[in-house]
Image 1 (tube, rainbow, N blue to C red):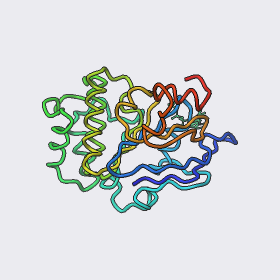
Image 2: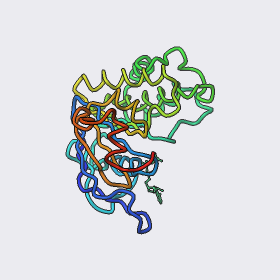
Image 3: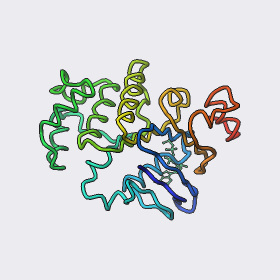
Image 4: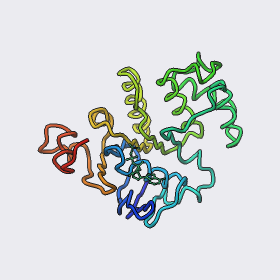
Length: 233
Ligand SMILES: Nc1ncnc2c1ncn2[C@@H]1O[C@H](COP(=O)(O)OP(=O)(O)OP(=O)(O)O)[C@@H](O)[C@H]1O
């Protein structure tokens, strides 16, 4: 379970995140949605201990990230922009991560199979397509068999096959009773994936609830966003 309460982040006096409160529950994919600059990455960076909040809290199973005993075993993350050294072979990248987190080496083979990269494990990352890199990022997030997955824009730049793969994978992951928090600026793709949605704009939550609740009375999730936020994408 992820609990964010009254989370606020200022950058040089400007509010990037403004009193954001939401919960992402086990067994559900929660879509964290908003246009570029809405405050999604700032929220996720605080949740994952990469940045400090100005005020408020972001907790993983009731604890701050830095207080988790074995973080990779509690929460797996894929952050926009973070990636392995291009010269490295995928299997070496994952083995290094596993070793530094005391995760058995056999788990590397398992996650490569889970994401469909077993046959490309020995290729250098620089030869990977964007879709393969996203799969590798998800493999890294899965290393510790975490109960919670946090993914920042995992379908960015993916082709329809790649998007479908991520959607099915995350749905299955949550169906096993795990918590998935997925940030995106892509409404339509997320509407096909998420059970619950939290929409932010200019750092503030504009609406949240189950997909059915948020879209009630609107033609689509995108229409709901425009009606509620009154903003262009
Ligand atoms: N390190 C920083 N220093 C100053 N301002 C920042 C910093 N990081 C983010 N911001 C600002 O905070 C606001 C929210 O940015 P953030 O990256 O959290 O949004 P986002 O919803 O993730 O957008 P995107 O989809 O473009 O990544 C933006 O106005 C951004 O310019």
